[in-house]
Image (tube, rainbow, N blue to C red; front, side, top):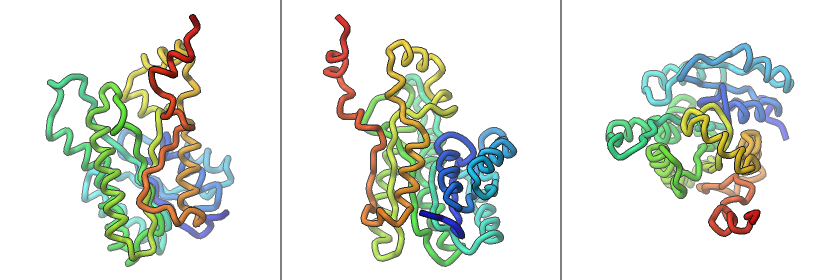
Length: 262
């Protein structure tokens, strides 16, 4: 499998799942374009990781997925460096974390949807407008939040539910085009974003319960994204696939009962 000569766009690609995904594509020869907005990306450290993988050096573009002017600037930059985008990985996600009903705010909810869900449509359409062709593959990073309770995850989960719905409808609208669009759900992935959302205390509780194995390594999510863009899974389209090592089936009260020590 090779992606040599292909350009892969990864939003939020300088850390966490986005970075692992970009590294996986880069290790197979892809020229990756990584966007970031929040905080300062350590570009030298990221380049070093690509060099360790023998991957082409990535192109960095500062672009907030929630700002239309940043999207326009990104498309202009892409036009300068490539003739089209083979795969678009919609990974960036931003939303507030309410701790009680008093924290609910409609504007915050809509901002989360705009930054976390809309880009799968907005960026895909912008790429079509920029290059005259749709990206061959689109993969949107989701989570199991819409179906499972997590503390403070109200708005993120809502955004992911919208994201997954848009993936399905976008697939239908582009059913006659040469493009595959899917979403990947993952369970807990230990990243800086995960810690910022749920706090450091959760890690201590997980360790106390001897439940570290329930985390999903970011690289496993990344490899699933690469597989969806490999040409070997083109029959999979408009789907929401769960990457969780099968733990969703057993994550219930019966499992806790089965694992009891007394």
